[in-house]
Image 1 (cartoon, rainbow, N blue to C red):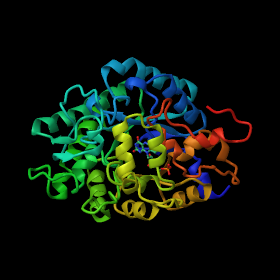
Image 2 (image 1 turned 180 degrees about the vertical axis):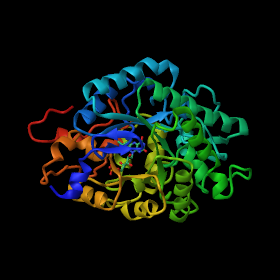
Image 3 (image 1 turned 120 degrees about the vertical axis):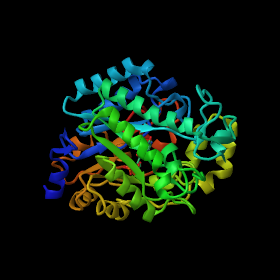
Image 4 (image 1 turned 45 degrees about the horizontal axis):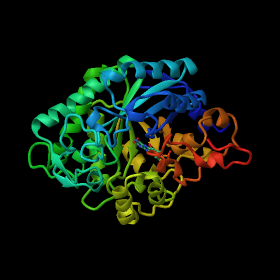
Length: 408
Ligand SMILES: Cc1cc2nc3c(=O)[nH]c(=O)nc-3n(C[C@H](O)[C@H](O)[C@H](O)COP(=O)(O)O)c2cc1C
């Protein structure tokens, strides 16, 4: 086998954590935790991934508190879920003893339509702003965090990280991108503060760096912390590559173990991180709330811009980050076929995260290792992504359409 592919399928270490190969599952919010409870459907989804040879799976969007959820069906890290989370990790490890489990730590900030807020009256972000998503749940305007809110926000990450380590996660991934809470602080588009948390990049990074410090303190030096950061927001007045390179340097200097470079924001320009077929028609088809449906019809064509898919679509920008930092690098974005995997390995990335390719084929590693003719078959139709709020959550509808296959 080509030496670059051999490298991809050979053991490696993430920080000090041994992994059996360099293929990681990207965080893809699964929509499989009804009422926020991690149950059998979530377990089955990740069992297929770890059973298929992936070195480390990532449980997508683990909110750091109940009010950090985008909707009220999302999983959140809380003592009330300790037993269920322990069960999830134990079962995954029993199923694939040499596989690892990471969890993506996220807080929505002001990007929420959660109707069951527990602590807050309305979603909070760095600055007050109108939110179409919030409007669908009765919160058209989000509020601006006070200093106490900021301290509390940081504490949710510390508590969640402590819990995640205790229940059996092997690593955590902090979400600094895609327009959620931390990304709202980093982006000049959404952070209009005039105190020490707004203005210069150093100030806009103050909260993300406090979160990293708190998570590190909670998990200790030997526990890997990955960070998913944005290369660009993909919007005027937002974060762009020159500042993103400085974001990477700051996270690196603050002791992150590995960086994953994505981009775009769910609030303003999600297709930057998806690429391929647009999501709006599929989302309208599964949306139950008539106001959200109407909103999607009105803003859909502007929100879901056309970004044609190409393999390794973040590679050139991610290489610029690679050249700036000492920490390990995880490539993400359109690494669907084996040639692309070989390129990523040849470029010196330590790991690759796969999202859609592993939804299409959870058995990817077992199928592709030693088979240079392997074709993944994901066509970037993004139908999986339109299902995140559909009953049963995310799966690949294309697989149901294979000849002789019964629908899931
Ligand atoms: C169904 C689905 C859900 C996703 N949910 C998340 C998420 O919860 N957190 C996140 O950071 N990215 C999420 N993403 C983006 C992926 O992690 C990844 O950045 C993107 O799919 C590009 O990688 P790929 O080409 O390997 O799919 C999601 C993607 C899909 C398809």
